Length: 243
Length: 243
Image (tube, rainbow over all chains, first blue to last red; front, side, top):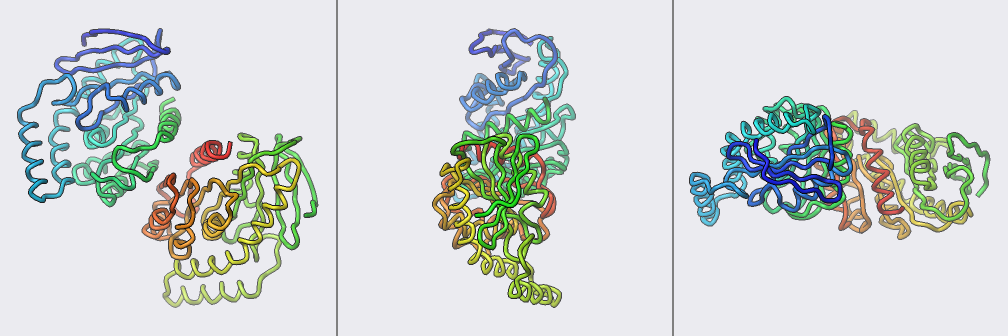
């Protein structure tokens, strides 16, 4: 794990790093020492580790709760090189949608493929970040919606360190089988008028989670329009389960 | 409006009152003076104005937010006399369910009938309670689930003073038309395994609300098993919209 830069602003320290070929960012309270809860965040499709919705939430988790937060670029996103195979599939999928195929199953299949790479990558990131003195091996949470849900469900199912997860804007097509292996508390976000994920698919993914404590929050609006007040709820969810 | 008794405990003052033939209770901060937000609470079927789930939430709204809270007995409940007509219909409905009819439409029809009485009663309660010096004409909220939702939807639709409402455990059969006239922010509680309200009916009632801001919270469990952490969310919802 190599650190490239470090900057603090408003009490939050931001460190850019690479772990092998994976570019990442770590946010911690400025001057932090000792063990603390860690939240891994998965960004959305076409976004990257420092997309505005990631940065704003990460800074809040650090400032309000004293947590550490890490995010890395998904293959083919952000500072990672283009991936020939993923590009080819994405191009193919666009053509299939133009020809009248349904979007959701194609997206689901694509996410399941990428997850085969990101699950081991993200586990390695947890190992490395928890090895740092100012993070340590405390409780772990996961936050990810849309692509971050499609990749997050198999990750949370596979990684026993994750004790609570915020997921959403995703459907059951790709990940119902993995969801059935998730037993930790989940807060699940649904956009009621989601133009990308059919409502029935969202509800089916929530249904598939094996967690005894799972809570679905649905709000009007399209895929990208999660209301601001859900951040407050997310903070309290993580504080309740990891704090 | 006549007050029968007054007692304070843990900083919360509880006053029993009658308004005409309606027995009620008012909770306010001990020693309160001046105008404050008021929440009217509607109890569940077979319950009453001081049912444990009402009292616990009311005391929290007062202690955490400084609000006033009022609850009254629904006709045929608590300290009110038996209502011959309602009793006859309830007995008939039990027989019809035993004979194989669906429960939900019968409950919906019954609640619509009772609402024709409770809507004007509750508006009179608001008038009277807001006339008190230590309550005044501040913002108004409504909280009610199950019967409190069946009666609450037509009340919130009819009463322009209500600026935010928590509803839930209710279906669209009786109240979709009234729900379509509700435009204030709503937090809507669904129990995912509700044995009394079919899930599709719950989601249809949420769908029917015309509110630009409405948020659905669904949790696993049966009709009576709303998880404790929803109280915290309710407090923050009312604080956001009435505080």
